[in-house]
Length: 193
Image (cartoon, rainbow, N blue to C red; front, side):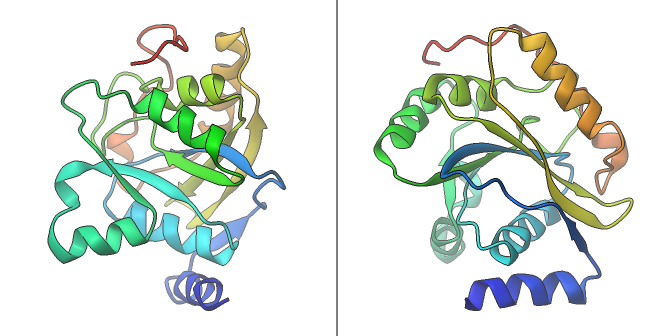
């Protein structure tokens, strides 16, 4: 209850609005896009708290150091070593299978900087774990964040990607020139990374 009040208070003080509601399901992957700023994490947490959703989120390992690292882990952070494959899809699939409730936010860009494609990890995790993907966003142009469609990833990756492209077409990042193209470099598979 305290987190919910804090989340709503911070959003109100920073003049952010909220649209939509999280789905009424216990396990899902959340797309956190567009991801262009360190501020995205603060607003992500405030929106989750204001909707009373307990989230886990992925962040580069280097930010999880010292006391800050402890705080970030307590706030749901999962350190990721981005420079090499580390079985993340398999470990998150196992975590989904073991949990009664689990919501994992994955920024598909994998970085705050512009890339020419989305990484397919969020899609591969959802397919492997048999959970849906929920579109969420922070639109700095309108100062609104919220939830969008829920997609059960299937065999038609192109159709699923078109849902994502359509939904995110008008969403603006804090640094709009850093927004990445919504496409996969390669077709995602469900094999472990």
